[in-house]
Length: 300
Image 1 (tube, rainbow, N blue to C red):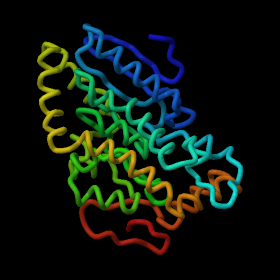
Image 2: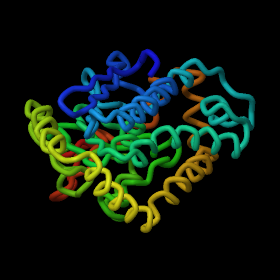
Image 3: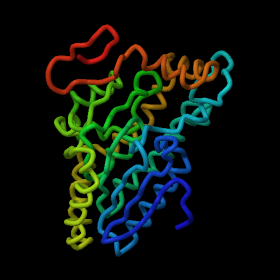
Image 4: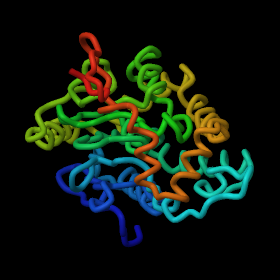
């Protein structure tokens, strides 16, 4: 494996620890990081010393999403041009879908590899962060983690539709249609993650689970992971992922997406995010009890 610039990779005690390592960017997913993650996952899968993989983030977040730096540097587009033409690197629907499918192929290694992958989620797990976390075999989150897909408000559709298989259609729609977030503790209640624990206990919880996996013959782990994933495929999971990428390309044609890109190009990314999210208050959903809000849209 070549030298990694955006990840930390270590093997010890029957496990590979893959750490997203762009803490200054809240582990935003650049294309380079996605390519290195794909390479590291297959390296771990090929290593007979590895029984399972822990996927985690360095710093304050698991991952706050895709790297939007190219968008911040974008110039205003000519009339009729699309935000996707600048950000996704293509001027047609098919170009956009092709770029989205390329990224999808990189992260599908998590689903396709033989060995189990455990996501250790803390801090922000937003947008692209959820695209990789929800492909993992087991997700354990800190109670106070923040999980959701705010870009659904004005930047497209979700290119990963594993949400449906984790939390069911109603909660998937509730979170898709608003871009609102839930905490790690709430995500556990709706089945979006396996469980949540206090943040200070997260690492020990994940390592303890992998201690148990490391005592199992890796070929048995493979057999038991893959039969469940075949079941997901029979329920349409793989086809739905492919369709999700194309659906995101379709959603990029929406007027609000073009407007987001215009604001980002003319006023900067911070202004575009404020336009996208400001009217949603704290941007949170409440899993149990009524969603009463104050005048600024914050849960009370």
